[in-house]
Length: 222
Image (cartoon, rainbow, N blue to C red; front, side):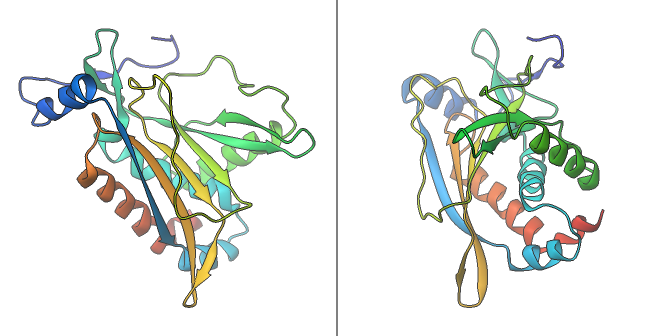
């Protein structure tokens, strides 16, 4: 454990209802799954335009807020491969360097106050836009989950194949380019999940939280 990250809280396996499922997908049939959905962001886009704030930090905050509401998506493995829960997880997100046509992965601490998080994310995106390394911030805490953006293309399916990644329990998100349908603005959102950490029920609930945050964007004014 790095010195900058508080230790996660172990899960009591004797009382955990998902113990059998966790052990099955950790050891017997280790697997991940991906879900891609179109999230209605019509009201989010309209409200954001009235604030002058940036789209990408707002998208990331909504994802991080939903993730931090659910322990399934704050799960990690301890050295003995037993499960534990981070108190909080922070988003690490991509920033594109157009001159080099490469990206860097940068992070800022999650804050439940959107304004505080937004300003920190905007600063990080500006600071590292010209970075020449993939991970310019060192050291990095262990409690990070991944967000990337593909603003050049919409998509209806997206998966990430992680070789030997069976111990990576935190979710991985990919955001696509907005598109229009029946007068509504839609955002492709893909999430990659380790089955040991969460079942389809949990991932559906997570996505529903994201949908509600973007459909009721009063927090943009915070």
